[in-house]
Length: 277
Figure 1 (tube, helix red, strand yellow):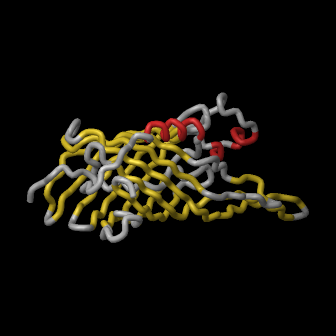
Figure 2 (cartoon, rainbow, N blue to C red):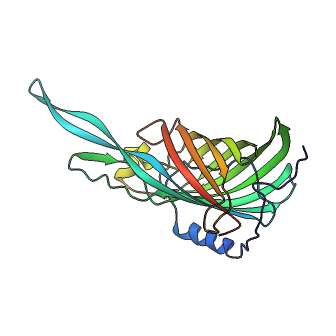
Figure 3 (tube, rainbow, N blue to C red):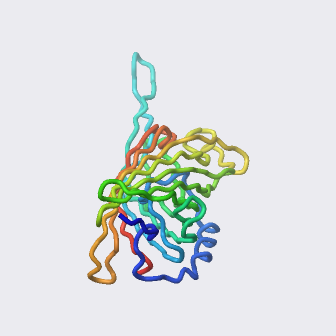
């Protein structure tokens, strides 16, 4: 089998990323948010130089509210802690741009941004005392470095490493490193992605942070991991408006899913357009 560096997907059309820089600058100025993202869609392959890939993702993500209920025991008043789980729709917009073909590790370089967050969250309750701090959408900027492909059975094994920056709205920001690998066989590419991340401050992890909001004075950082598994399915190009790929995916985040829960599982699906619509 002959390996070719057609990177993430064979580009049938070329897009002009003229406004990409301006879009990223605007997002950085006006959007800062929660301390991690749950959707990945990194299938291990990278784009050819000049090729673009736009992903719109949607899925379910859980958030928590702590309730303190009054109870009467032995003529004394006490409080019982209850936790309510809220399942909310989470959306993402992901943009990728191929930069180099082979350097630095043999399979090219790719950059992009990832914007993700819940579209609704209202923990209002007459007995709710603490609701998770969600904030606006999270913005990530990253760089992926492709590692040389090799044949595996009847398919091709693709993998890359990535480093990225999550823009926080506290005194600090998030930083992460990840490894993704996928096995491409015809129109299917099952993949896994593992990320280790130093999170920006999560206000729900410390009551003192939410009681007195001082974003440039206090910080409380933590580590977490995200393991994502999914499959990239290439769709037949029948109508130009339809996506080129669909990616169902599941992610496991631990040991810091939030200040209230140590782990969480999210489910989502991404629709991907190669080199524009």
